Image 1 (tube, rainbow, N blue to C red):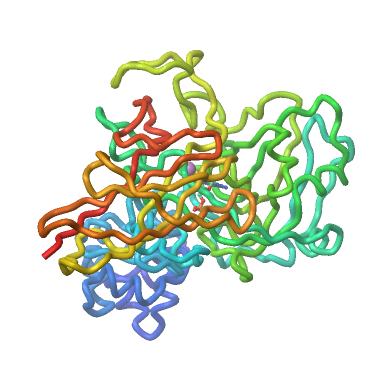
Image 2: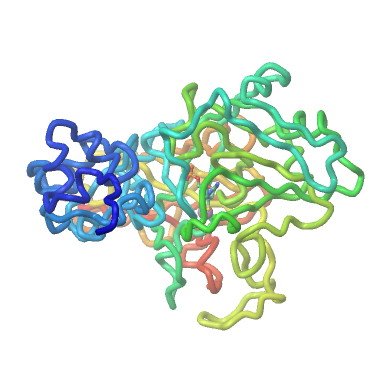
Length: 448
Ligand SMILES: Nc1nc2c(c(=O)[nH]1)N[C@H]1C(S)=C(S)[C@@H](COP(=O)(O)O)O[C@H]1N2
Ligand SMILES: [Mo]
């Protein structure tokens, strides 16, 4: 008989994990998920039944490969539920995908001028580092690359001490926001309108840190590396490693941030350190930031080359198979707006004015005008538009609407940027990966 190796309780039992750890549900969560689960979210996807239900939902047996389950993975047995489940630290988000985690914010929950952490969308390409394993005290950021004169490594405390702090409200929108509206459909997360947010970030300027490390004259690009893992857990692969041209990296508003809305950055949004380059596809704003490289060529990290975050150089017919050399990397995002109040589907009393409001943004540019229409774009009424809190923040707009008679209406909002480009009323240029849909947002109103 072979010598027995020590067993963990779940290896020798046929009971479910939460049954075994009935005294200590948090320990059960660590075994099951690799981390603790917010009791609210557990309740959410367990249809309000007891903890034992989780074990029975998983078949009541052991999980032989529990130690290999990626942290944050929702077991398929539980992910199948039709009950919405919640993400730790998030409130009311729609989960599109659980592996990796991707969740968007319904438009009416983006009503705040400054997006709270609980309402910021989540776009993960890989597996985030375990929250328990992150020590902000020992976290380091390395600056290197062939166009860096003196590569250096900083702790977060050193970044805070050595460089001037800056706070900006910065708009981040996933390049694929609105993808669900393309026909034929494009593969990828089927975002509707909620992969956008505009929180306030505090950190140091990328420029100040890079200059302290010496930028060689041949520098053309920066690239970031984060602490998340590739979905395959293959350490030689990056989940994502993108970047921006030097001109964008050196802007005043490009930050290496440790705070969001005056607090630590939420775990799923990049705690404890992230890059923020507002106005460009969200994918350039690296989360769980560990390293920035100064490059003498366009950064060649994961998801940097076509077809990722790239669109055809010239318009193509929907469904066209576009060769990679005919595509270019997306830079500044196009002008766009959302209606955040009222919530779509409202019944409004005839004879009363309806207050509508929302936000508008325009990549590196600013928004010049916002218009609303209640007749499917035949006529437009100018909305009141506020200046942004700073460059690259979204702008607040509002309008009062009167309806001529009872019945069904749609309110459409349309923004125009500082160079005169307007949002299109219908879905713009189809592209293979479904990026840059900036069509007008619309909500439904019944007037009775
Ligand atoms: N390290 C790392 N950074 C990342 C990502 C990622 O998966 N890993 N996703 C990118 C993408 S595609 C987007 S749209 C934004 C989303 O930021 P959020 O999840 O904080 O909303 O983060 C970007 N930064
Ligand atoms: Mo993204």
